[in-house]
Structures are given as structure tokens and as C-alpha cells.
Image 1 (cartoon, rainbow, N blue to C red):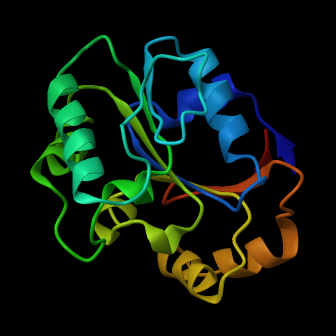
Image 2 (cartoon, one colour; image 1 turned 180 degrees about the vertical axis):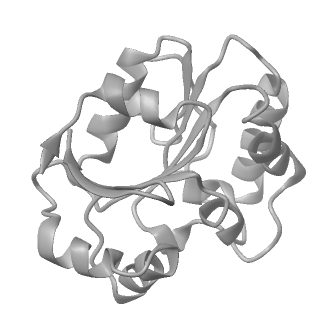
Length: 192
């Protein structure tokens, strides 16, 4: 298992849509905190009000609701095309969508579609891959999979790339900050 720095990860994910999933305590928050420290042109979407040392948007609600979705969409509209932001860290991003089976709200779709042109890195962070809308997970460029244990989550890993379920079960431990890096071409087990 290779150790990797947050700066090395930033270089790999620059300008990409990144899916970061893992159980509580697996290392997601630690990773995104380190990424924010390495890129000072960042913003957190922070529904749990956890990332107090960083530039962030804290919605008035934290649980999935029409109001939360509207607040987050308004924020996305506000920052669309803002060249000062290079890294968006969308923590608890599964909470922003009322129904993961419906098309993405227009503001989110615009963010997904234009982020590459705007040279923004968007990190969608959640506990479980199955909690995220398929339009987010299937349009991901890079996946960072911390520990996943649910039957449906493991199946979803193999939907992304055959064999990821086996790697998860054999090599990823929830308390060691290790994860699977997958970019469509390469699969590696890394440790932050």
C-alpha cells in the first residue's frame, strides 16, 4: 500500500468530478480537510457545520428537504463561473437531493457540466455510494472509496469497475485511512 500526500492527490484530481465515499471514521473528513489545506482557493458545503477553519457555506438545514436543496442550488448558482474557487468540497452531498432517482436540479447539472471548463475540482462526499444520485456517481472522473460494507454498496463498486468489491473486502480497513483510488484506467490502494 502506497502512502500519498494531499498535494499528490490534488494534482491527480485537478479539474475533475471526484466521488469520495466511506463509512464514518474511515478517513473522508480527514482527507477533505487535508485537500482544503493544500488548496487555499476552496469552499466547503458544510451542512453539519464541521469545517470551521475553512471558507464554507453552512445551510440553515442539514437534513434532506426541499429547503436544503433550494439553499444549496442558490449557492451553486452564486458561485458558478467564480474563478477564485478551484476546489469545492460538497460534504454530506447525499443530503442535497430530495430524490436521487430524479434528474439533477439545473444548478447542480450546470456545476457538473461546466466545472471542467471552469477548471474546478468538485468533490462529492457521502458515507455510501448508493446514497448519491446516479447522475453524480456515473459522471465521476475519479473515485476514492474508503471502507464500504453494505451489500448494495459493494455491488455498486463492481458496477463502477469489476473487482473493486474484492479489493474493498480484502484490503480496506475502516480505521487506517486507506482507500481505493480509481480513475477509469488505474486502480490503486492508497493511504493518506
